[in-house]
Length: 44
Image (tube, rainbow, N blue to C red; front, side, top):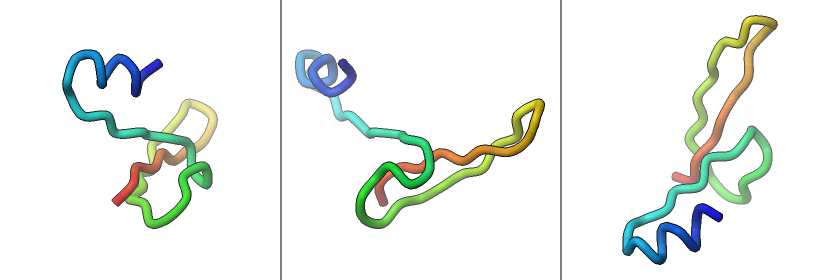
């Protein structure tokens, strides 16, 4: 739903996914959960 909505609004769309879901080079950030750590990635 994000990409079609961004297109309709005429704005950019940057997919942010869980680690390992995006093909090619990514920037990643780790964050703390109450029970451990997790990581999000965005295309470079």
